Length: 262
Image 1: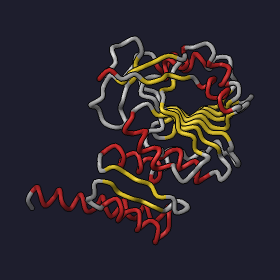
Image 2: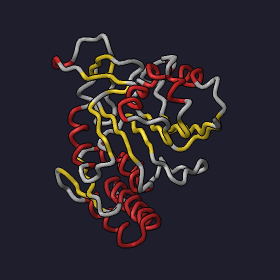
Image 3: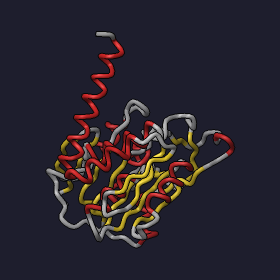
């Protein structure tokens, strides 16, 4: 058997396994519909299954991979820390809005703030969430203090953009940097049910700021992906910020789930 035939059989086997997984989670009709939509060789793929809300995926590796992480692997599934009725959610590093849509589908009354600093991702975020007025989109970067930042690797994959301050702006463009405390003030929130953070190393700046304790004290569940591979001491800085809190933690896929016992 030739190597190309072997590769072809392996690819087919993986596709069949994926189809079965989609059907197991979303039943036959929806699972098959999602699987077929993802196979379409289009510039933009349209998937509609969660409450008939259309989801638009650019035909690139990042969008499709994240879609599968969120809706197939269910990396934001809340077990073993279930929340029955989340009404306030912050999605820091929203990308094109897939996590926000996952939470919006799970929690019918949830108000969600989605923050994304990369312009093309942000436009796709707006498109994906336009039918849900309870998702508020902020073109900004979550940071340790209010400032301006810029994307340092504009040619990277759509899910791997890194921001930094006090650097020359790429293509002359800067992005507003905001804090979670400032978002709470803007939207008049006094507590947060879920904070999801996936910001490619900027979490070090967020948790290095002593005022992080203010919003952490108002948070029930924190879901975070740490990026020591991008920024040294991310994990060390993060866990130091939690020292004065009583919490339980577990790992799920790439994320750490922190449930606070306030």
